[in-house]
Structure formats: structure tokens, C-alpha cells
Image (tube, rainbow over all chains, first blue to last red):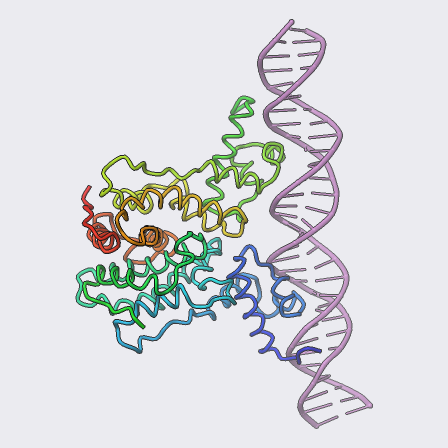
Length: 192
Length: 192
DNA sequence: CTCCTAAGTCATCGATCGGTGACTTAGACC
DNA sequence: GGTCTAAGTCACCGATCGATGACTTAGGAG
């Protein structure tokens, strides 16, 4: 026997594996049998624990509460930190993409859009908005910068644009500074 | 009888309806029966004409060759034109989103990534790259600007970020100018 | 060792899907 | 009007999916 009979542990493993599956293959591309097979458990157990595939998806995505950089350091370093996390962090266990980008694949599901918006707003825009302090349309500037980071991540991984796909973090640094200054109206250092 | 027996016309109607379905519901969310039902035809006919669902998808997406603004006007007006087309154009027949954004929903399909990249590169980046003329890393700047436009469109429609979702074209105009100038190193007028 | 509860399994259902081949029918041509 | 071809239909297959309920078994408590 590989594992003891532990309800909570099995539940956690199911959530972990379904996160990966949902991120990599999308909601429709993931079957309950797949997830159960990863854990080495009978598919029926998934329904006993989560009730439905939809509930499993919701709970898995809720638990994946995007690991967000805390606004601990100086505000000026936030753009570089967020770009690193969104674009360059090693998300290999999530099919090589940031969970937020991967979640776009599951756009067919009802909860997806709401959860996406919640994670983007509370996880990233709230942190970023400090940079726009003092500007008139603070929220708009913040979302525009967030849109840029998200777009870069998508072009890199989901589309595979030639130049951006090969670009390093250092390549983007000067442009990150330029755009951040253009949007937030103040210099933003981008060196680590 | 609603329509005469016309192979080419029926084929065209199948392609048209499948474009909408694939864009709105994604590849997995669209069934051949759905498409056939829209046209009012037997599902088997779809296979007679296209061989497989995958081929139907490929041909439908190829035919949707994203309507791209031609680089006819002055180069300086390109950013505003592309933003209008990508973000504010009325794509109601494609589920309210630009076909490129909608295509992200079908990321499960093999051809999707390739076709996405092709359309983005040949349809948009090639046009945009004129703006980066004279800059050192021309291609990178171009892709970074394209990433921004794409990200804005995604935040607006797929994520539904509060401020951006309600923003008008005029709201974005000054920031479009600022970012374009930051990336391309020259002033870019944004008034229509 | 026994027993009892909960963790996990098995068999199966009904629906839907992509796909196939035999069939029917519309409509142009003589 | 008959006929022949191609457009379109019908019945059906095998696979897969989400989901259900009856069943089996592990493992701690006494």
C-alpha cells in the first residue's frame, strides 16, 4: 500500500493533482478519472469528497490562491517583482504558465471569470495600485499596467511570440522601467 | 424549404456558424451537432464536408483571418487604430470579444497556438513594427506593445476588471500615447 | 480477536460525443 | 416525365464522460 487511509491527506492530494490538470488541460480537458488516476484512487471517491466535478474545480482554484508577492519591500520594486512572478517564475508544475494565465483555458466554466477577476484584483491590482498613488485615474493606470504584465505572460507562453518567448528578465528591465514611469509618472528602478 | 441545395453555400454557412461557436464556447465546448443545428442540417453532413471536427476547426479559424487594419494611414495613427480594433470594435458576432482573444479559449487544440502566433505576428506585429523603426531592439518593443493591447482586451472582456471594463476609448487615449512614446521613443498622436 | 465506522472500490447508468455507412430525395438534364 | 448524380438524412457504433448506490476492506477501540 502506498498510502495510509487518511481522508484529509487524500483530499489534499486530489486538490493538488486537479489544480495541475485544470491548469494544464483546462476544465473540459480534465476528467475526474484523470485526477483520480493521478492520485491512484477510484474516481467515485472524488464525487464522495467533492460532490461534483464543478465543485472540485471551484475548490481547487480557490485553494490555488495565487501566491502573491507581499508588499513588503519598497514600493518602487513592485513592478519588477510582479513581472518576475507573473512572467519568469518557474511554474513548471502548472504546465509552465502562471496559474492565472492557465486559468484562461477554462473560460468555459462559470466560476472561472469571477475567480479570475477576484484573483487579479485582490492579488495583483491591489498591490500595484500603491504605485499609482497621487495620479488622477489611479485605478485605470493600475489596471493598464496589470494588463501589460498579463499580456506579456500570454504572448510568451500561450502564443509563443518569437522575440518575447526568448527574452530574458534583463532584456525587459529597461522597458519595464520606461512603461512604469509613463503610466505612474515617476521613476521606478528595475534593477534587482 | 429554407434553402436550396447548394454545396458551397451550405459549406460556407457551416464555417460561419462554427466560427461563432468556437469563439464563444471554445473547441471542447462546441459539438458538431451544435454547429449542424445552427445551420439546420444533419450533423453527418459536417463530416462529409470537413472530414473531422478538428479539420472543421482548422478551416474555420483559417477563414476567420483576423480582419486587420491595413497600414494605409500615417504610421503615427497605428496604435490608436489597433487599439480600437482589438479592444473597442464591436465583436458581438464573436461573443463580444476579438477573435484572437476568443481563440485563447480553444487552447486545448493543437492548431490553436500555431494559428494564434501566426495571426498575431503577421496580422499585428508586422504592422506595428513600423513604429519601432530606428530603435535597437525593434522586435521586442513591438511585441511588448502588442502584449499591452492584448492584455487590455483580455482584462476588459475575459476577466472583467472593474475600471477597464467600463473605460471608454477616450479614457485610454492619453495613456496609450504615454506608453507608445515610452516604448517607441517618439510622440504618437492619439486623437482621432 | 472482534467489531464497527469510515475510507475506498465496483458495477453500472444515462447522456453525449465524434464518426461511419447505407439510405433518401431534390433538381438539373435530356 | 423519367433518370441520374449529388446534396442531405437516418440509424447506429464505440468510447468517454459525470454521476450514483451498493459493496468491500482497512484499522483503531474495546
